Image 1 (spheres, rainbow, N blue to C red):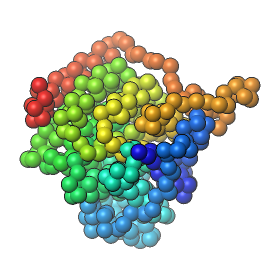
Image 2 (image 1 turned 120 degrees about the horizontal axis):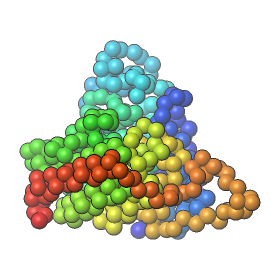
Image 3 (image 1 turned 45 degrees about the vertical axis):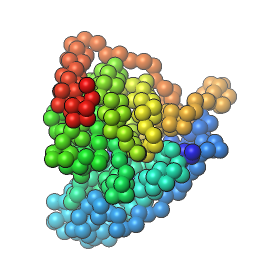
Image 4 (image 1 turned 135 degrees about the horizontal axis):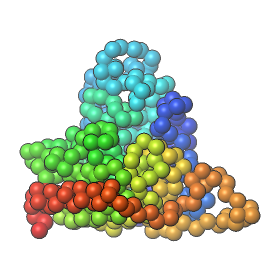
Amino acid sequence: MKNILMYSDEISRVEYDPNHPFKPGRGKHLMELLKRYSLIYEDNQQIITPEPLNEELLYLAHTRYYIDLFKRADEGEFRLEMLEAGLGTGDNPIFRGMYRFSMITAGGTHQGAMMLMNDEARFVFNPIGGFHHAGKNHAGGFCYINDIVIAAADLVRKGKRVAYIDIDVHHGNGVQNAFYRSNNVLTISIHESGRTLYPWSGFENETGEGDGFGYNVNIPLLKGTDDEVYVYAFESIVPPLIESFKPDIVFAQIGGDAHREDPLAHFRLTSNGYKKAVRIINDISPKILAIGGGGYNEYKTAALWTLAWAVFCGLEPCDHYAGVVGGMMYGPEAHAGRLEDEPFVANGVDKDESFAHARDVVAYIKKNVFPVHGIR
Ligand SMILES: [Zn+2]
């Protein structure tokens, strides 16, 4: 079965605002690295230029009121209600073309989901997708249209079981809220604690309501979390839940902002911990829809996505150009350094504290959530 990359030059050229940290240009950096490391153009791979989403599908995730405001803002109209809906803020500026940008990114995620459902692919990656903070009636955290909720909700109404694993450093609050009362979507988010990071939510006791009780799982970890603590928590919780839930399709929001060089968050992951989480996702999932999410060190994020792409496609990165120009680096690597990081293990009081906290969170989930799924 095929591995698909959703790639759009048009989307890679979009800028929210020159000083805005969210850079769609990461898609282009990814493409350069995939070429450099011989990870693209395999026989079982296909690059698809995504089409805009069918407009009716927007209402699977958003209210007509919000979409109407969003379109008017895109057309240059200004109303106070827009600010109340999160439009025109520092995080979510109003920029020309934002409606088309959102429709194409959501279109790519939705098209990927449909291809997986129809057995046309085993793995799809939409790097400029994964807008997990967008809410039903508001924008937030650099997200306008929640492509994840739209695609997952459409799969659910077509009778599919969807699991969502979010390894972006921020809590996937928009996805949590959309499926909080549903047991058709198992939502798991591992992130920096809401005590120190936007969106200030995602605590372990947010476990779903009604039919959804036990189907919303949060693994908040303390700032300073390193690979060791992260992998311990991820391995303890994610595989047993996915194995028991038996999803048809797994969504993986693989934001690169848990990396220690990310400027907006406070984890200390290296590519080693990130890759381990990705490898586990690959091993436990029948079909995977990966979406890029955050990552504000642009080049490092592109490097992490490159490693994820290689894992999901079952390939090893191979640099044919290494040493060619007297060992000189060029292209995005000049900024990213090497594709993979040296191992890093934190120690000291902070480390003990973050490990103890992770153990408490894991114990809480095992005690309160695992029984819902019959996991002993
Ligand atoms: Zn993020």
